[in-house]
Structure formats: C-alpha cells, structure tokens
Image 1: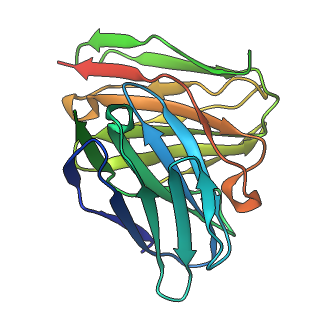
Image 2: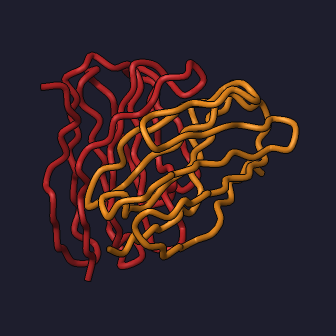
Length: 111
Length: 115
C-alpha cells in the first residue's frame, strides 16, 4: 500500500531558527513529490521534485529529494512568524491519478 | 482570476439528508479531485477525475458520489450523510493529473458538520 509519513508531526521554534521537515514514502511507480503550505485555508503549492539530488529553492525555503532512500526534506532558514502553518508532503504516482498526502507537520514560529 | 470555487463554505446538516457540495474551476483544467481533511490524518483523496465523464475512486470513496458532466464542474454528492463524514473538504484541480507533474490548485474548503 502506498503511504507517505511526515515527521515531526508538530514543531515549535523561535523566529530566526532553522527547521528541517521530513517526508518519507513508499509508493509503486513514483512520479513526483510535492510540498504544500497550508495556513488558514487552502494548501498552496511550494515545490515539485522529480529527480534525486537537485535542490529546489525559493527564498528561505529549500527542498531536496532522495529517491534511493525514499525521502525528502524541506528546510526553512531564518524562520518568521509568517512561516507558521501546516506543511504537507504528497506523492504522485506515474500510473494513476492518485495524489497521496502525508499527515502534515504543524509548525509554530514564536516571536 | 484563476481559481477553484467551492460552495458552500460552511454546512451543517442532519444524518440522512442528501447534500451536494459544488466545485468549479475556470482554468480549463482536465484533472479535478476531492479530498477530506481530518486532524491527524492529513488529506485523503475521495474521488478524482482525469477528464469529462471519467471518474475514479481515491482512498476513501465510501459514502460519496461524484460526476463530471462538464470540464469546469465536479460536484461532490453525499446521498445519506452520516456523522463520520463531518470533515473539512477540499476540491482541487490541475492542468493534467499528478502523473504528468501538474501541481494541484485548491479551493478554500467546505466545512461540513453532520449531526
């Protein structure tokens, strides 16, 4: 059975800290791994990763995929209170229309 | 503005009373999907549609129906809602399906309470 496991489930840090969020997966016919940020309402897209070892970066956020060890990490440097959110990891399969999400990591950044 | 629109945003109903949550997108996307979000369980896929008249079950389809008669609309139907369907529901769409590396665009959610 395909599954996605995120860790930690929740995290509290102070502004300026660096955080690393983890996503491990088991899926047949891997196609892509996606990261989303969810604040009060709809998840918003952050990154899509399809190849191992290639870092995607956007401002203070970056992510990398390891297809051999079946995991990805999302790094946030110099955290701000606006980074407080649920971070969701999802896996796309190459032969179905399913997109499977992990449980999410709830990040709280304190001033 | 490109968007996925769900209605209603909030809904309180009673067990057994049929309801429909509408979803519409204006981006000419082929792929649409419904998810429910429950604490500790993340987003779980209910149904998805690769194109008009093509629908498939996700991981938690029991108790739900969908239809895709037009490209822009993908309503979620609960024929006989039960309290365990109390949840936050999201509709999402993408240009093509996940197997084509198309990121999802989400609607703002519908919070459903079944008493």
